[in-house]
Image 1 (tube, rainbow, N blue to C red):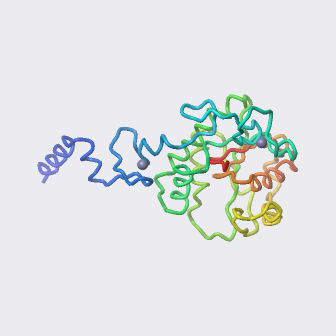
Image 2 (cartoon, protein in one colour):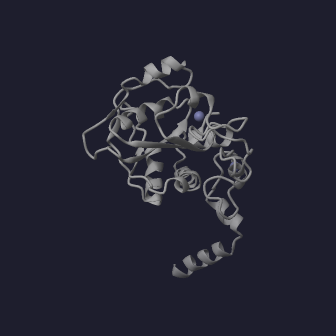
Length: 257
Ligand SMILES: [Zn+2]
Ligand SMILES: [Zn+2]
């Protein structure tokens, strides 16, 4: 029996990498191609390379300037975008890994609603990359806590997809995760498709800060969500944290442009 097992292991090791991987049917969840190249853990290199970064200095990015406050891609160089000029947000700045379109959008949706759990490490890596590349260099004092934007209170799901990836990011970045202080107390409609005033009304009273501890006074908070669409959710959460004296910087995986 032992000889048989050793023989199977030896034969398996001698197979080319492609053949070994295809036995386990590792496929790219976006294009269905077999993952056979070195470093292809969750998606294929081609799909990974197609994800459009918002950072104008990133390799392969379109190089268009962005609003330094909300990270909106602009067609021109400016101190801030029109929206940040007319209605300056309360957060100090917001940064996002990429544009909420095509591969990145598909990846986030597959992870959140398609049950493709193995994508969580890849997405946590995106948080880490945007943090190291765009945030950490400008924040020498670092952050006291990561606070994730909470999901709907009525959502009875054991698996909270965003908090899973934020947990991994917190471990890698060594910034303590503070869950349960910022909560969602109202079930809301999806923000997409609502007008600006409807969006604000929809989220009125939706979030709350529970308990007095730890104090938010003077704390540097990294507020994290998956997608920045209109920014209303991030802005509502920021408002609560600022009222208690925090300094807020926001970070997301993807931004609508
Ligand atoms: Zn692919
Ligand atoms: Zn802006």
